Length: 512
Ligand code: FAD
Ligand code: NAP
Image (cartoon, rainbow, N blue to C red; front, side, top):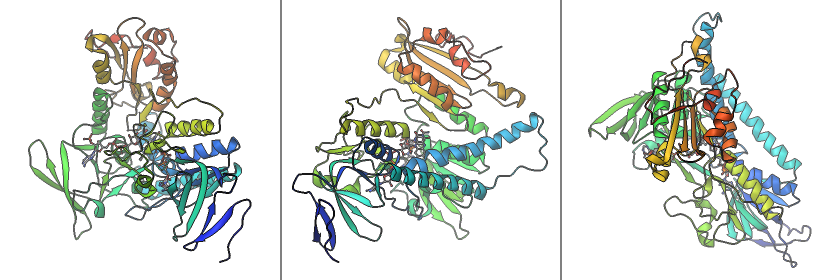
């Protein structure tokens, strides 16, 4: 191939690669090269381009062991929030159909769910988002490269295509937003060969059937919730507690509700091996850690939801001396998302101590782009980020759990207001509302600043989002009481909480 000459850049040929080198004026191919086109990387690159920076974003998806792969947009769009919420919605609709009969809808014949129809509709939506992201990058003049990126030096990124072709890009600043991928236990024979992860479940064309979900945090409980909701026989294997880090009283309500609606739980159990039987079924052997006894059962699918590992291995960070946390493998970052190497930044799921949530990755990415373009000095505020677990009974929260508030302020330093309420929608439907609960954890002294707000019930994400703003503004218990409710809603119960846990009085809401 002939040597190339493009613009101001000089090109040289090394091992059949065309490499653009920095020109004599010290300029680079790009102001910014972003590795990873997920929630954070896309937001950062688009913002930078809007601010007049010359930007390239590299995004590459390594297929799973099962061969599942997807398009541009990262975890949230393809194998996270979006397909998860849509499948959660499918499950909620199943419950609504049951309620509908009580509301007078004449539904004749059995109501069945067809996985393939749901999957196709979800895939079509995800593909439309993949396309939308490509169009947006084009519109904003961000160069999108479907290449696997790694660092050569602090201003040079190597991109590798699926076919093995290398491209070198130089940039003033490099941003790493390569996210994470699900883990699979290495000490459980058969786990990898026979199991799937959240990177596969949303792309299955056929129903997963009877499923064992191993793990008990966000991903495990959300997946188990929608699987149960669309009619799968589903068991959750919990090795310790559910929803570590969340308010444990509420975690108990969430799992109780799931149990009531058909999810099975194997508490304090750990998987030992997975064998494929001649029938094709998966035989799982596990140990009950309380008794030490082993148990066996067969499943059609085993879903590992045992956490996520950062995507740092292929990035060549060790050669450059980018500091990683040895335990987690995540990149150690300053408050301005800087790594230990100048001109290299990182954020999102790859960042040590950062919440693994889409909105934080997006906001952090936008702010970083603005700072790099000299538009602001504002830093990302990672404090008190609200979140919702989309389990069959949704759980939204912001701030501290009761346990954490007690640890920081002492039992006598906090006042906990709480209420068990019944959503109006549940009444005619004759649904059990025992787990619909509100907890507002406050400082005991002074204005009773709110330290944590927790809500389980329908549309918990929508409810919590509004209160999250109040929380950011430093809301107190008196602010809550000064707020007039919207009737009839579940959210109004939050502004009406008046029973303290300390009083021991019945916290069940009666009347309007
Ligand atoms: P990602 O979105 O993971 O993007 C990283 C991208 O970089 C990927 O496309 C990856 O393939 C690519 N990449 C990796 N290495 C390279 C490389 N060397 N070169 C080029 N490209 C590379 N968060 C919420 O806020 N709400 C939810 O409801 C929610 N639900 C979730 C459900 C599930 C099942 C999971 C797994 C996660 C969920 N999350 C949710 C978390 C959310 O998806 C992540 O926090 C978010 O996607 C992180 O964004 P990111 O930009 O850091 O990384
Ligand atoms: P996680 O929060 O790290 O939880 C991992 C779970 O797996 C824990 O219950 C853990 O139990 C268990 N586990 C780990 N190793 C195990 C093993 N070898 N055997 C059995 N169980 C094991 O991981 P995640 O659920 O994958 O979530 C990752 C992140 O994604 C979350 O932090 C969240 O920020 C994000 N996310 C967000 C949403 C949302 O916003 N709705 C949804 C999904 C994911 P122990 O507690 O005993 O360690």
